[in-house]
Length: 254
Image 1 (cartoon, rainbow, N blue to C red):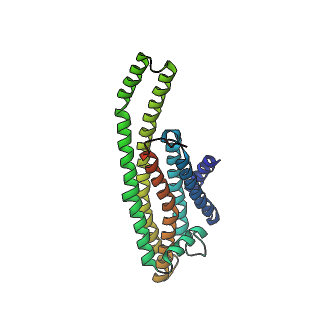
Image 2: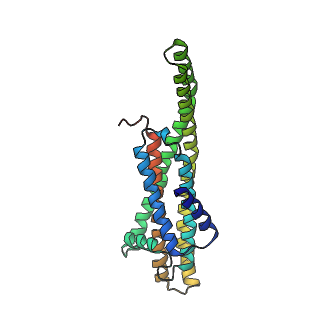
Image 3: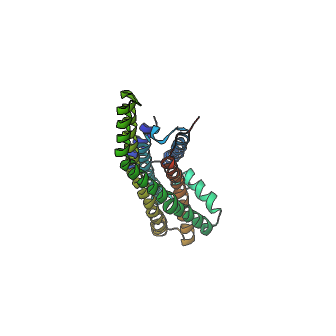
């Protein structure tokens, strides 16, 4: 069900304008999906048991990017109307700025920097190292399995299971290495989105909607912060979950 909703939402968000109420629902769904992945990651006994994590990570990233397109469209076209950009974005922007745009914007930039330069970069580096070590360890593991089999320490079925586990581990960490590149690209797109929403929105507010400079700056900056938080918090959760999952080296004993 989650995958079906994600797929339909991605297509709709890219192709057609979405009403603010629908965007609110999709943003809430994005939060719920990120929290669900977080819970599954914590509860899974070992990383390779969560073999669907890389495709889920890619799907969540694409979904978040398409949702970013929809929210940007709302901000640029409907920000001058009451609740034109949606209730969720407005609520996030109001809570963070608290009538002080400078402080709110600085806090948002700090969050964006933490995600881009600390969490995402760290997860990407961990994925690269784990993928390389998993690949380099394959020959020695295969030789060890063959030696144990020839010595009679393990049966043929046990040897097959160990070879299969080695192949799954190599494939999992190799896929995770590629999936983390999407996360880094998503963080870069977030920076571009902030610039577009704030600068282009300010020009639209002054030039097309006829808003005073102060009101246009207040409106579009607050909505930019709200939109950024609505997309960056789930992205930060997934980035942290990715690093946590890859960094785990042992199975959890229940």
